[in-house]
View 1: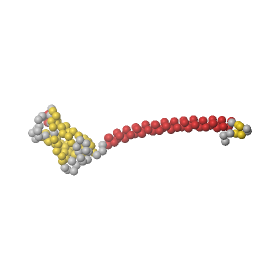
View 2: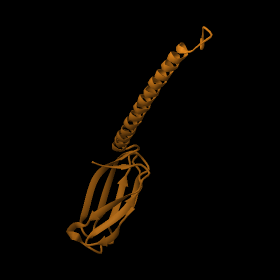
View 3: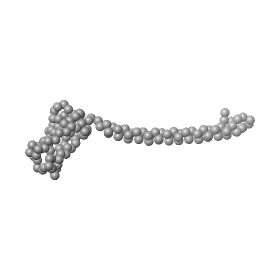
View 4: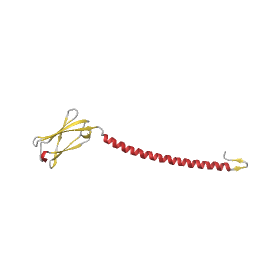
Length: 144
């Protein structure tokens, strides 16, 4: 089943029976979930192909009917209008998961760098302690 987003215009293309051109009575009606309907105005774009645009204002199951008495056209189908497209959400979640993985990697790198610096500082501190323990002046140990 076709799916469209609420309040987002989309184009309906219809190929007339027998690729007929010049149809002047091609009409479209969309019945919304609340039972009200909207009319479509089709324009010919060539070679028996016609188009109309529609912007759904209600979420739910819609019915489209396209007819032409002069050409014998009759097309009926249903489509769904959604407020939120779950495929879009899934794609955005995947993108965010990838970004979070990159951030986690950066955080790990920062922690590793911090640990390296802490180890170096501990080594420097230990060496300073060794130096302090070796300095004597008049029998007194300095640095305590």
